[in-house]
Length: 111
Image 1: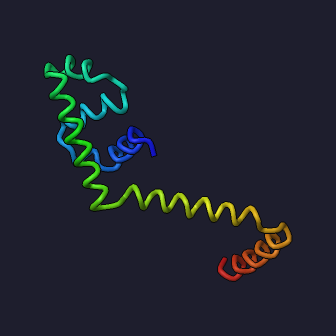
Image 2 (image 1 turned 45 degrees about the vertical axis):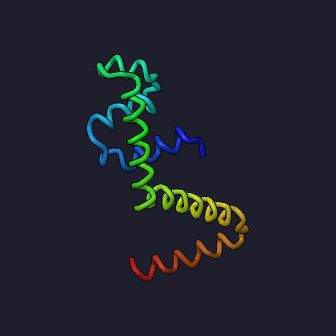
């Protein structure tokens, strides 16, 4: 996965765990596509300070993912859903009708 996309996804999951300043700078850099110079100018800090904040924030986001694994779990769930969809698309129409009949029977039993 491309690093920019990865950090952007991690930010969506764990961004609230960063400081307000880190959130603002990560938002500007990754989501608003501002350059280091533009962010520095907007925040009245040096370009190097912006880079340091970004690197520190990236390190924190990666650390949160390593500990909690929410992004990995999301990817695994997505893969499982895609697998189920693929399996469902391979079911023959006759089988679907049989399943539908059985579900209707169950529905009639309970409602």
